[in-house]
Length: 453
Image (cartoon, rainbow, N blue to C red; front, side):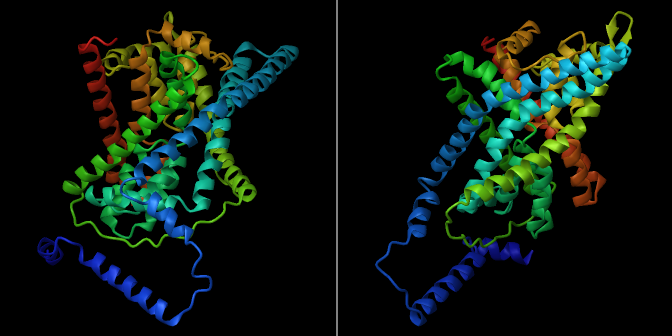
């Protein structure tokens, strides 16, 4: 109460004035008692900060860097993905021959080769190339010292949204893995602001959702402007989706700070580190080992059993239809209302253990035989979706639902451990789900009402 009264009487934060005065005095003392050799040399740190953290150029440069990182990721991942798919599905053919040579029953071959192995092969061929490009690029920006400048630029927005400036750092961690982003929320001292950061970390896409976003943008958005500008168009769409996620983070933070988690925003002082020349070799090796391999290993652990379960559901029939088909049919009316269909919703439900396996499950659902197809032919994959009645609206809503829906199983488990609260874990799951449904419903209804599809 006392803090609130002081804040009303003093619009400018008292803490900011105190910190500013301390730094001014420190600078005065430092100039008085020290001598700097080569005073005529240009201070490049100050020069760069004047541009990268300025109110005019700070955000445009952030968007530009984000776009360059995504462009390089999308442009560079296609060829390695196709090579990996070709190699891994060649191995699948040899495994099939091996099962035939042993005379193994068809159900065993289907469960192991078309369920376990094919799910893992799909995850590796689609996930590994973009991760192997995106994470090192992100790590190089971090090594250069740019990420603290991003936190500095975002601090004002999070403060206005009722959050904490450090939330931007945890959000940056969430781009790699939301579970890691939730753990990173420990750096926020205020329990109220830490909870806001935990509950909103899911709104930035993690590595498991990048393949879905990139695939949908490449198939349905890039094709609309021609092949020549396809990569650029896909990049613009993905950047737009990321910005929408950041805006949702800010909006939900603001709503939470005014309702369930009311309180006075606290301040933090971030001393910007000096710029450094990135250590390319060490940074790339470390990011591949610490992040890419860790995430890929986790995806494989979850993809294997999920692929097996999906194969069983697709091949277990009740009447003349598979169990998978029955579930999808039951979900279809609701899915249609929000611009999706029953198979898409079922894929997201079965993909709870890891977002990486949503698209493979979706493809398996569409393939009535219960077998996944190879992704070495993008045109064939798009044709498969078109045969199921997909339009650009379906692809857009898949991207929005993937961006906004509930966190994966690992992240929910991490939230439960960090908050030690069943109530907040349930909120962390249901809040984004309702937002995802609401956004997709509004988008679908507006687009249909305007006659755009």
